[in-house]
Image 1: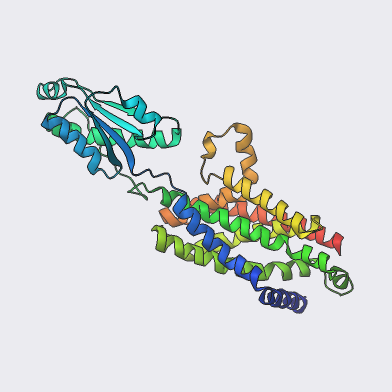
Image 2 (image 1 turned 90 degrees about the vertical axis):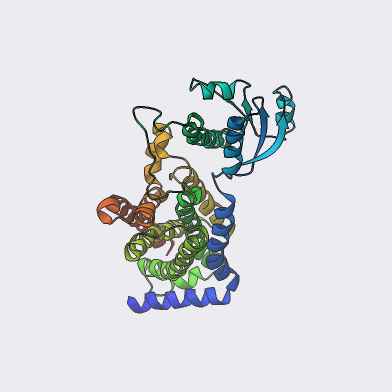
Length: 367
């Protein structure tokens, strides 16, 4: 058995060597996608076009304006005497936000009385608007003490302390999920074409005439791509650390184990698809749809699972990326051991076992 598995593995590796475009795609596609999506996909908002209406024109109001501009988020694009032209500036997209400081601002702050400033925001993009609003609130709160020149503003004071991602960079949150997305898509598509290639070239008939068994063919087809996908995963993790400052606080050994479990499930699903499809085009389409959309939408990669409808939350339990992303973030960002993410690892084992069993059954029928 071992000799036949090794022979099939060597054959597949030689095939990848001859088909260098496929090998390059398997090794290079995850790296390229990580760089493209890693830089393009971000929840951080910078260079926000700001209009300023300072009706107070005092030192106190200038300190507020300077706090907005020095924060690194806002860029002043317009300075106005009153708020009437703001509507035209928003329509023309000259500004995205406006800071309106009333004329009695300095007097009220000097008297330590209640005062307010108006922050106008373009809400057509709700995600960006919520982020910008959070920036504005943070800046205003940070300026409260200096405006009133008092040591204590309330009976209680909240000092924020952020663990694991102190700078609140969206890349630290998104890149681990992006790794799961890329590895799932690439591993499924890679093996989805493996058996179909044999069908299209007519070599499946030759395999039927050999003493090789279905499980041996399955292992021989899977192991080469598992090796290639593991190398690709290691390179992607290195780039995530080098380019996006994603920390790797946990054990590399546990990280490798969880990644291998995830890849085994993805490769097994690709083999299962290849036994259903008759052409490489159909196999590619099935592999892309069944791996990309669930991983992108139902894994917690971008959208929190807890905020989804109950029906979709139930469906998300059959998406392996859900468990891999949770385990990956626990290992990479928090540095915790299997006592925390062990449930996710068990779920990955169950998923990989089921899809490999289904792939074996289908392989038996095809042989």
